[in-house]
Length: 176
Image 1: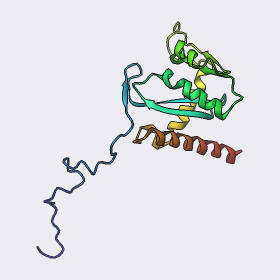
Image 2: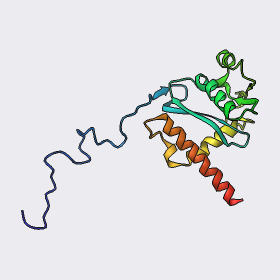
Image 3: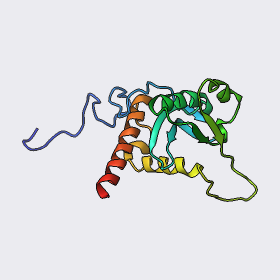
Image 4: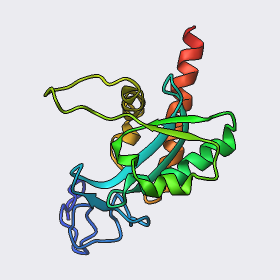
């Protein structure tokens, strides 16, 4: 081969776009289960969080999309009560209503108020207390790492959400 001319073909198939090479995938193996929620039409994971009235993150949990929100709510509330024992009232949407959550929280000194949406009027309506959590999720989604679920472990996704909230709070403190 003349000097200065390189061969473009790789005979061993080690090119990064070669479809047969499974070990060089960018994302790797997903360890935690992912699912599909037909109601919300989401595949992958869902984030459940507890925030204060200003929208600051108190507790967060990442679950597979095929699990119900109320299944992890009791554990999430108990974790928040362990960290912040002065909490006594929680506002939740209709997904958390039901006897199962109420039965799991009987021993806890806490009240869960369900904020229901009225479907009388069509279109978007701001409902008191419900927009706070949605605003927090939009703050978290400003971070590129949290726009999609890139992590193999749900624990890593929870930590990145906490880092995003810490970053947001530090920015607010330094601007004041």
